[in-house]
Length: 407
Ligand code: PLP
Image 1 (cartoon, rainbow, N blue to C red):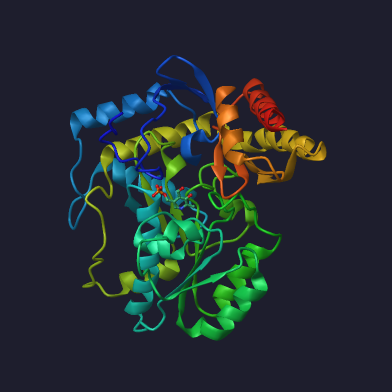
Image 2 (spheres, helix red, strand yellow; image 1 turned 120 degrees about the horizontal axis):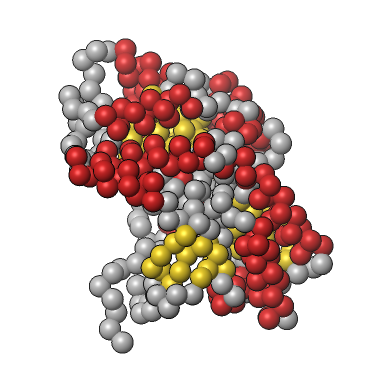
């Protein structure tokens, strides 16, 4: 068999066969043969409003008919970009934030890292350039985010990364404190996902995020929340920052800002970062992408947020979590899985010894449920916020049966 021209992301280049998804509707997608699958990871943690939303498709098409894009560099702007940034600023967990736009989460992360360094450079403190990340973190694949993320295999083969980065245990405040004690005068920013996603779904220990805020304040460092997964309803509020009552200085977002109907990401940039950038009226921000402020992506975000708001979908995360998390806990009590973690509508289970998470993934697929295997033994769930109880039950049954298959 000849290999397809498409070199797939996060896949074996030698792979020859792929599953073709052709259509989506609500919490489900369909393959080329018409088989229905519950999309239990909302594709890649992003499709919060569910598939097949014609109102978003219509908004994008209408925009493309009028103006497909015109760049927003320097003196130019467009109405959809102005509208969505105003809306995002108004709902930001960081009071007084402005909004930088990108097309992906990785670009958002690298933008936040660069903005953090730049704000210190503008204060005449270029020595404050050290960036801190955590083990198990995922911050995308561009060189900045890759340097800061803490999933070791993702870094293999890509050569030297940023060398000014120190990783701490993913919930270890003592280690973070020691690190700030040693390097605090050079640390520009600490980046953390409020709930770690791709690294295995790890909610924070009580007080951990507030502790990071305190350490950053004590050492005049910036706190970046990477909310690429946690933003837009996943945790039962608009932001992880809201749920945990901690105000960061910068927030990265992507994914559910459009629920995937268009590629869009960005950074909420708080006043501590903005101040030094705005102080010199001649200073130029030499950072931005061709599609920063792409109007079709911006109208998709506006339509998507309207759906989340109008249908009260953010309030659905908790009830979903009660059914899904409760069901997973029962499987754990029965000894079918070794551990359960989660909060809101994002959950994960660890397999018991001898059960392969990849085999479970495949067996669940055969039963009409798509999940994502993570690490060495974890299966993650992060369903669209429109998922119904029947499909949640299907997810739980498919997991139990898939594990039983291997016994
Ligand atoms: N940050 C976090 C927390 C993510 O989960 C992801 C993607 O899963 C990214 C950044 C990177 O986003 P993208 O794949 O859109 O570049």
